[in-house]
Image (tube, rainbow, N blue to C red; front, side, top):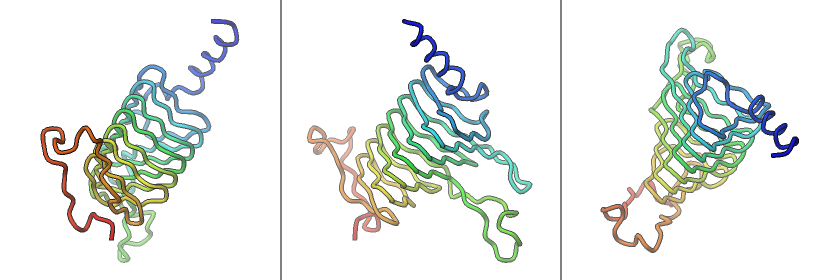
Amino acid sequence: MNLNQIKAALIREAFWRPPWSTRSGSRSFVYRPRRIDGAEFIRIGSRSTVDRHSWLSAVNSYAGVEYQPEIILGDDVHIGRYACLAAIASIIIEDGCLFSEHVYVSDHSHGMDPQEGLIVAQPLLSKGPIHIGANSFVGYRACILSGVSLGKHCVVGANSVVTHSFPDFSVVAGCPARLIKLNVPASLTTPFRGHAVPQLARSDRRP
């Protein structure tokens, strides 16, 4: 390793590694400029990256209410620029996922009760945790909202808003997102991890 390589490695470790309070594996980086809230509630696996201008927010207290958040990125997860991941419950992104730029993932929203005063002063609301299966792709400017679970090898189209869950190998797009097809490999025609290929409810299918 020459002097320039050593210098580059030191810069990566000093400036791009996640905060010390974030549990992270080897060769994982959150590039600057960045915003990280609740670093102690965030866990990042090995060889994962979060690109510049992204915001990771694990909210443990808001409007007088305490929460128990977690944001977990697996190994070999790569998230593009300007992403926003915000949790009061749980966001889990399994190994090998790839996110494009400007992706928004949040397991909560603001309370909007007209009788409770300012929106910003109301407690946050959640429909449940978010879970994204291994080796899934989330396209440019896609939004994934609370309570959503995506299976392994899913594809979310650009500008989609995902409001409910889909099984393994789903290709979804739209606002709200609908099933386009099941991208099941030919080698898994009828057997599907020991089960039949999943059948989705009519409401999950593209109109």
